[in-house]
Image (cartoon, rainbow, N blue to C red; front, side, top):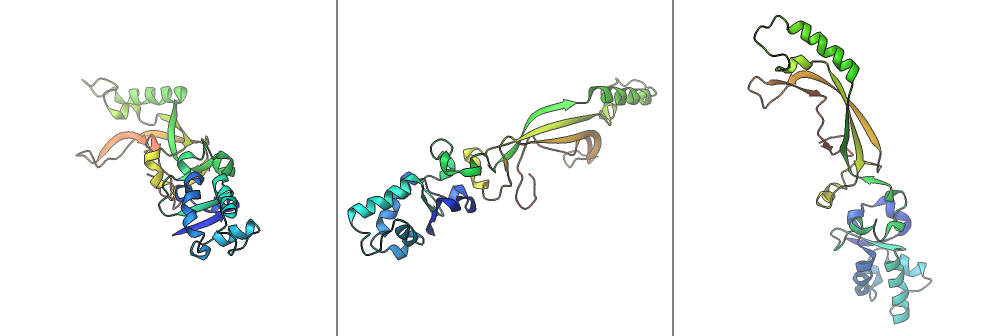
Length: 218
């Protein structure tokens, strides 16, 4: 499915489904003999104050192509040759509006802050509780660090090129936004362990996290 849309509607469409204006110009040339075959083309023709009867004249064709190549009108299609998402920031940033600054992405770990004072108190309390365990070196068991805390800081960053297939499902935030996740070191379920449990930071959060529009995180 192909259709032309005015630049004002760019916010309504996934950038991975919009053809680069450079390639879109050549793709629409074949439709000038039958403008009705490409949804939106007749709207572009009217926008240029032309009619379908005179559009085939070379000077009129070039007027329409110029509108496309400038990005005033955009070609939406299922499989673009070069999606606008790949080059919009470098070459076509002026088309983007708020999407130059916000859009699909992923949460990336940028910092971990351990609560030094509270953790010291928690570790001392754990040590007092372990004094009766003869022959065990303190710190050799996860429970020695029980209830220590830390805060993960993640930043919303753009998807890598290899991840662009996730863009249509991804939640959207302003690039550079931060989120803070407070974790506590506790014993919890672990399907990789024979015992079914292990000591780890909870809630479990990967360094790279994908958030989707349906509320699912991976």
